Amino acid sequence: MSDAILTLNAGSSSIKFALFARGTEIPRQPELVGQIDGIGAAGQAAHLKVKDAAGQALDDSDLQLDVPGLTPHQAALRLLVDWLHGHEAGWRIAGVGHRVVHGAQKFSQPVVLDAAMVDALRGFIPLAPLHQPHNLAGIDALGAALPGVPQVACFDTAFHRSQPELAQLFALPRAITAEGVRRYGFHGLSYEYIAEALPGLVGNERARGRVIVAHLGNGASMCAMKDLKSQASTMGFTAVDGLMMGTRTGNLDPGVLLYLMDYRGMGSQELTQLLYKESGLLGVSGISQDMRILLESPAPEAREAVDLFCYRIQREIGSLTAALGGVDALVFTGGIGERGAAVREKVCAGLDWLEVRLDGAANASHASQISSAGSRIAVCVIPTNEEWIIARHTARLVD
Image (cartoon, rainbow, N blue to C red; front, side, top):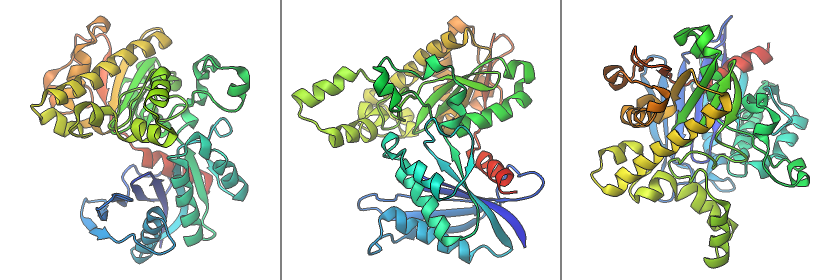
């Protein structure tokens, strides 16, 4: 029986998992990868998909999550554990690595979890109320299902703790800052992977220079890196800040919220729904949060949503370039960043001032380097691999 590392990413509406063989080095390709989608969706069954390393389907079925006494997330986690027990022949799970959205200022590195650590993570729920509880539910479920197996928390905020203090501050009274109200940044596991992969693509010197990474998906953010460390990011206190996203507003004048409270009578729950679930590409287009659908739509509202999405990226590239004092490389990652050639083209078309030049054929084929020979900065496409980062940290800590 061979040892394996299980990774878990328990989100608000989905649970992603992967199983990696544990050897001297963790392979970048997992032995199996799966996802449960549609958790908590009204009128829609949750769905489980699992594939092996060759891409063969191991499961593709609807799930019944109406279990008395359990929330849909708890039921999904229980079914996942049961599925793993039924398909673990030949593997012994030696450690479980969890993606945890928030580590606040306390955690700047992955940690092996114990009861005190888990209690500390519960204390960060006010900093990430829409994400942290689901992460903790995954930790609780796997702890109960696999007693004695070490569990490791890998934090989305940790990569950004290298930022200068000024980059982490809001212009708020010091007493409020002392309560933990500051810029944290997210998608750190993705940026950590890019920092690992980039030297092999553009060379160590350029990779350690001034780099801007655009993680573009349903959630989207950007990170300015120097010497492969975070210097600034577009997301701040929460994952709703910065870029326009699938259903999230991104950067918004706080006065808009005061207006909606005072003149529309909206409370915190309604504002949360608006900011996180009803805005972004979906809100502007009135059609969909899916970039693929909007790019194919002839509707002017769809075009405007795409244009605004790209404009906001261009604006933030300007801001992050200023934070770095210039830029040597631009990297696209995440679902849209990796597969959205039209979005990359539109973004780069507005970067003439940086002397960015795309190779059209390379961009269309999603090549790893899409800048032309005449481009002053390297423009790259790197598929992210957060699961591998989690698995590698977990294997190291449970040795």
